Image 1 (tube, rainbow, N blue to C red):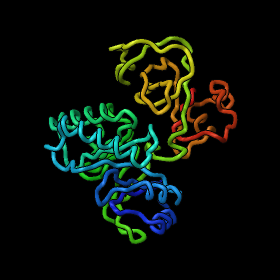
Image 2: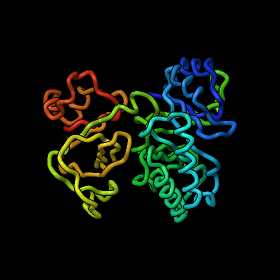
Image 3: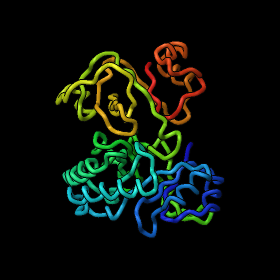
Length: 302
């Protein structure tokens, strides 16, 4: 099991080394200028220790009244500014917290807030931290999902990227929250920013959202044949772009089956999952020259 932690402590070289030695592969830290935020130097320390870095942006977010369109606009702009200030690679994720119990009609506030955030965050992908109910309510409105056990009443959503399962634990002298890494969470590092490619064989419809591409509604133009970088995937749809790290257009890969590589997967395991062979997968994916060299987030045609 791959494990990570989040904390409000500014990490020193020794802390980072010790936490890596304790088995932690991921560290989630705060963007901004507060007592709990990290800077360029700390980002380098964390990555030098061999720990992958995850960005959080949170000012308050612990009451329903916080979640307004106005606040979403402000937070989106500020998160973009602070991410660039620490040289966070474009195309990686910034997580925004819903740090309270939200249910029923209250979700409309959350949707309004995140819609505003996303419009102000052109360079990065949007992650959401919150309860099981928040994960499901927002599953079509974000790129990454970080569920907390708090307010989740024992339920765990099957599509999340991280699961926070324990709070306020002292490890190697640092107060942390423990997290299980369920799939690649949009972290910093070479693995996170390697670019998958997708070849569009024939002109196809271009859409603004994954849901639109899936339903075939609200078409906004076309995508010409060619090879594109993949900015994001969702609901079996693909966001293709000519500019790496920048969102493009959502397309529907029609009836073609695609697989997004997760942590720990091998080509042998993937072939077995789909009852096919490594050779058949290679034939559809000529970019795979070495069957032992695939990476997390890579899109493979089956």
